[in-house]
Image 1 (tube, rainbow, N blue to C red):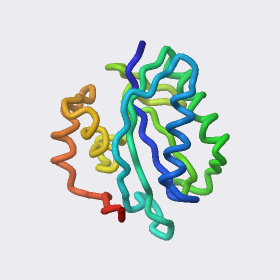
Image 2: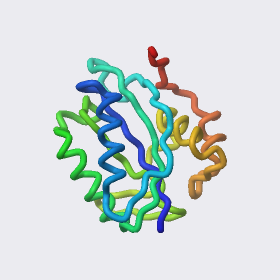
Image 3: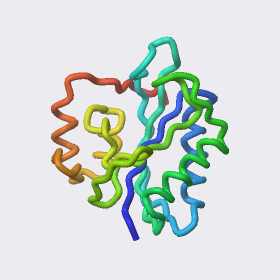
Image 4: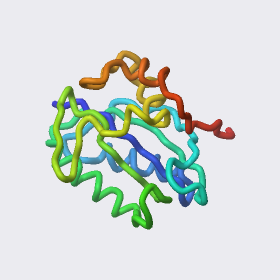
Length: 160
């Protein structure tokens, strides 16, 4: 079994519900178990500012799927949920990113592990540290230290 952290984000059509729907779909993947899920975090858009704020989360799964197999399964979940890419860093119904896959480091045309930008994004690091406080990112170090070093912040308080 492999331990994989997945980042989730949405800013359209009740984003919190979109994330919960995606988590349910992830939990139903073959040979995959949802182990833990962070709280939901609000964030300002990283890209164009003329779009709604995002809701983000991170989950940990145990899976027998290969990195490529998991990527294909996550893309299918996005498609089944109605994701359409409108513009770079733009609004989206659901976005699912493999952040870490065991201690693996790999780069292909479709997939980079660890996720190439995760160490720059508090809306990824904060929920990651919530569910895995001691997690280390290969070649970069402690997620907790990386979070503390970030100059730019995107997190916002969610209304309960």
